[in-house]
Image 1 (cartoon, one colour):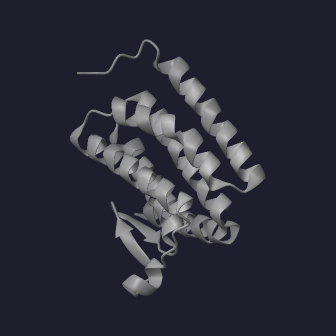
Image 2 (cartoon, one colour):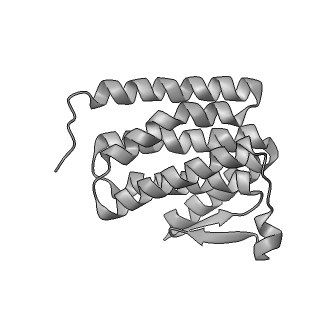
Length: 166
């Protein structure tokens, strides 16, 4: 059954403003945790709004990765997945994803899952929320390490161009 949408537009508007404010504050202070915390209501609302089997799974996966990301940032936990897995990239949900420090991989997975949500959902509000999460995920990566952000952006553009060619 479809979720009520009477207040969905104002809720999504407020969540957009909150995420935008979090991005501005987080990038100005170089604090990814600020961006993450301002994104929390958006992710919770996304979990609430999704209904399909794959979208529900993607949104719950998003929430789990999000909680882990908070723990990694707060605990200052670093773990190099490239050396551990002996590979530079992995396929996640049909997308090539560059590996690196675990704190950067978290938002990258969040971006992939939000892309899955955007493409698989039919609801305009869940698409709207997926876009907020996608943009915020890239802002989190930039706040963590701008050099990795440029590498990830290049990787994303190449992946997008590869998909367009097929």
